[in-house]
Length: 240
Ligand code: UDP
Image 1 (cartoon, rainbow, N blue to C red):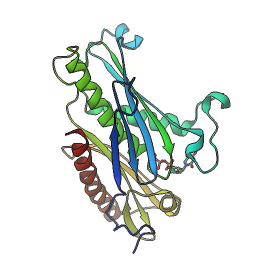
Image 2: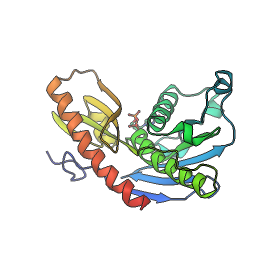
Image 3: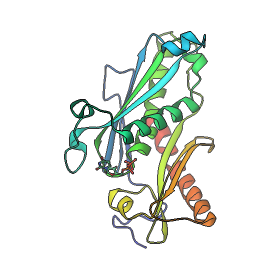
Image 4: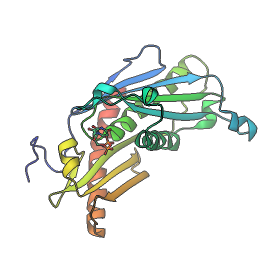
């Protein structure tokens, strides 16, 4: 099957990573997966959440927030602040981003500080959570380098890199890094998060009014690994 943008089934969209786009943050990137564009910025706060103090937990904390800018979608998306309540989808996505980043962080090395990672979608065309995770990993690494340069930590508080990609079944075929038109037609939709050692951090897969076989699951995991290896190369090039 030829995809509507001529990609092969396992080919990700063109990915770019522009660093330091938010100079007041200690680490920031603008990441694009095709027409999906997300700003990821890491800011350091010199304190830890109250629950950590209460539980006498040493080290630091990393947390993420995610939102779609009102003009990122085809029809304007109202801000949570004017809607008066947080959106469930956004809450779920920001927790996924936070877990993904903490899985590869060294919170002891971070010391008693919190790393806030803000992911704001500038343009949404499918795969905003996977772009956010892939970009946030770089923003955190830049902030970790900043902490070392400033003499605040002896070594970077990051153990590994993390990247994520979507994969789905569209018209019976397994496709990687779905854009919105493909995502809309997908009967199975999955998001896979892996480290640069190809260990899994999270796999979220669901049949959309559908079911999938063990063979399809295996095929999707293998296609996602392929996509993630392409992303890891791009991350590496952006940082070196
Ligand atoms: N989308 C939208 N408005 C919304 C939620 C989603 O326009 O409130 C579109 C957007 O293009 C997004 C896509 O639907 O990228 C797929 O959304 P999904 O919830 O699967 O998350 P994503 O693929 O962005 O991680």
